[in-house]
Image 1 (spheres, one colour):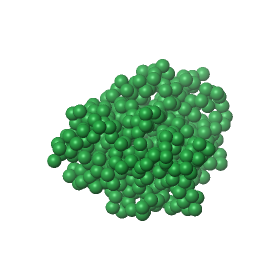
Image 2: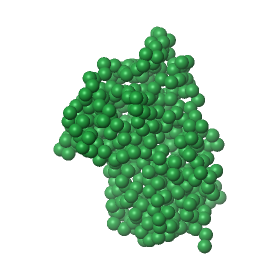
Image 3: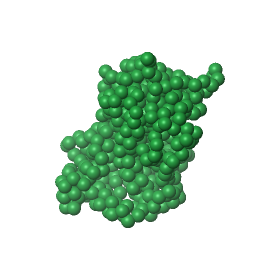
Image 4: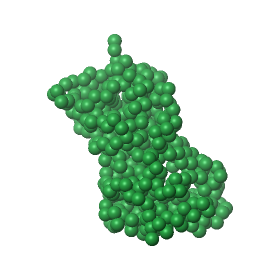
Length: 466
């Protein structure tokens, strides 16, 4: 008998889940309410789509496994993405000082527009599997609290029921999964929101001549001074362009939408390097502003009775402050957990969905801990405040970051956790703890760790902007 799987949402999480399901289902149907673009173009269903997205090494690794016959790394690089080694290709000012750049490249991340990434992943999955996409809006799940049997959907032709042997909700931060579960009789979903009131503002620029190899540059926010957070970054993207993304928390840190004020904001950051880079660069877009930035989590793994044949992934399960660059990696890691359980057990084994939901909670917990442990320190944060445990963890973390500014041992631990190649327990390995307690063996960098050629580029851009 033919087995059908349905995925709600054609974003990154949905397409990776579809790729996983294609190995065990005879038919995989992806449902999305948007008209999907034929090229790498922004679409309405991704409110954060115009802002900076970093695909960390921990997220790229499962993507390499999920799409049959395709190296997603090579596919994305061929489409125009840039590969950035964290150890040598990034210039970053942390609250504890400048990170040094080392000979060892460290983990690598990919940078491009979210539109390019989604388009490239969607095309790779469709070309490599039998997955099909239908335009439809899902109204509710069908079945019972014991087992989901499909979805009820609305299309241009009217409403219909679509039977399924497995359903994945990857419909993003606007998912109605809590309401859908309640309609089936599952009404004990616990949710939590921690909202620092972050506002993102992004503008694209043409990469200035001679600056194509300038490192990814960021000035991080400082959550520990009792003031609103303010940050900025310049990252290379496809098409010989720079994406400049600013972020600030409520109470006065919010970046503006006015182009002149946007530039002033970058120059007023704790170091003006972002503003110096773009002051003479050619802007290609208006400033795009977004406020859909809170940390929100649904603890579906803790539901008393989870229905068979239903899994929730990606932003439908948890969203994170985008400043930490974790969302896409968490989605990919969740799809890999689904893939591994499906290959062990097949599509219809009782209890499979609950096992997947519990396994998916592990990368969610790691990302949640990293994001929330910093966001609770910003003034005006809603939904959380630092407790005794937070203060102890923060004291250790700040000391470790300070050490990482001059210690390769500590820096490599930070890169591994930031890249989601390992969990936060990596920071408690004996070698990392010893390095942290010993402090940085090298003195703090006085300014941005640039090569002489990079300094010459910055001086030239300074003159251009005068």
